[in-house]
Image (cartoon, rainbow, N blue to C red):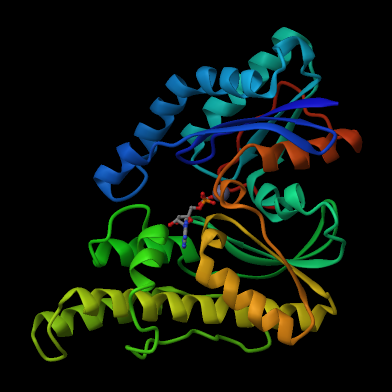
Length: 336
Ligand code: KG4
Ligand code: ZN
């Protein structure tokens, strides 16, 4: 079956074509140059830009796959969670296409797309596995027993990991999106330079909290401004970025591996925009190796928002006979 998938839950307009689990094309139109001016995603601007982008992005995905619309047999679209104005553009476009061409339509959960995305390039990833989804909107750990069979083990009680990267990058004047900017600066810094807090919360649970860490970074910055700590030179910012990245990664890696041990899962998979982070990957790889746990990742283009992951889940939903009708509506807080 040849599937067209559309993803527009936040600020990227994405379309992909998938056939029998194989990605034929995946096109992403980023809006980073617009939102970068404001230091974060502006919902109204995002939905307007989706309206302009959606058609050319779908056409580009079809062209890159070497398929015409006539060869598409089903349409999948992100239903939520996300920004409702952004989701509406993708859902309305997908419904129109499905109606006009008489194709089956399937709504897909965005977080489920991220969670299963490691299977795009690792089809050998077997169940059960522990999946960590770390993005701008989510930091959640799941036990994945099978397709559509998930148990939420823990989630952030305040900021998502990517949100913390973005907010700290803004404090350090490193630009937007913050994750790649912090990773770059952190590579020049000392991760042990500042003692920043780790929120372990209840050691027996797998919830996360990053807002205290963000506040701690702010207070280091403020102390430095009053000259109590040390001069704020380039080394200072790099050290602070490295210490922050270290604190986030230590908690993510420790909790993910503890969850795998608790669930008796010999496999962990990392997904979402923050999983682009090379330091996080290396740390997870090293510590998992010590515990004889296998790690799975996807290339960065499938970590950040993309429609290939939506197509992958949609393909399974279609095979399971879960088809939506034209009453399909976005759900900004759609649970998994
Ligand atoms: O998955 P994604 O594209 O969108 C959401 O669903 O939220 O994730 C975007 C997030 C942003 O917060 C961005 O700063 C973060 O992923 N990110 C990174 C890196 N690349 C992107 N965080 C840390 N290190 C990176 N290299
Ligand atoms: Zn996402």
